[in-house]
Image (cartoon, rainbow, N blue to C red; front, side, top):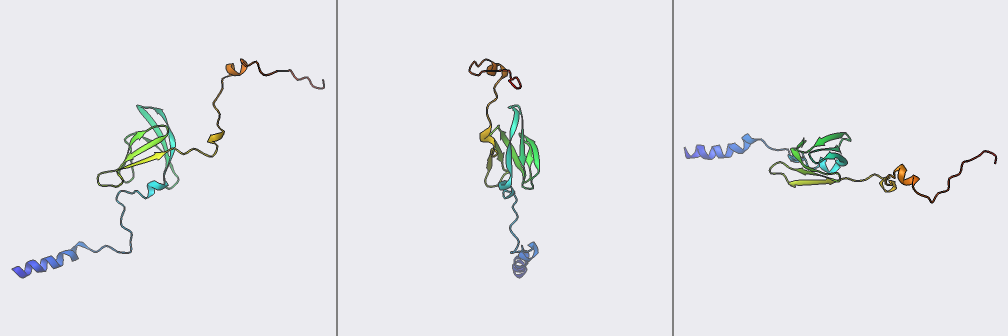
Length: 133
């Protein structure tokens, strides 16, 4: 009976199946694709915020607070500038934050001025153009 117990201990590892050492370890939390995602920004009000994110395949997605992304990542906080994800239990890192990155032309944007503000300025001369004269 004692020998059967030892024999069972020797056979158990064979029954579990061996992992192929040449294949990468499965990323249960799928953190690798998150490095390639991009936060495009958000709009709305605090109760109902809508954000645009671009996944690692280049596809744009509309997401809201508490939506679940692939790998079990849950959207916890949305603002115009940041999006915070929370991982499922046992994943590292437990939190992931994306900041909105501007485009190459963001520095050229100017604040809008109203027509009343422009008309109220007395520093410009306005002349009616007459052709030939």
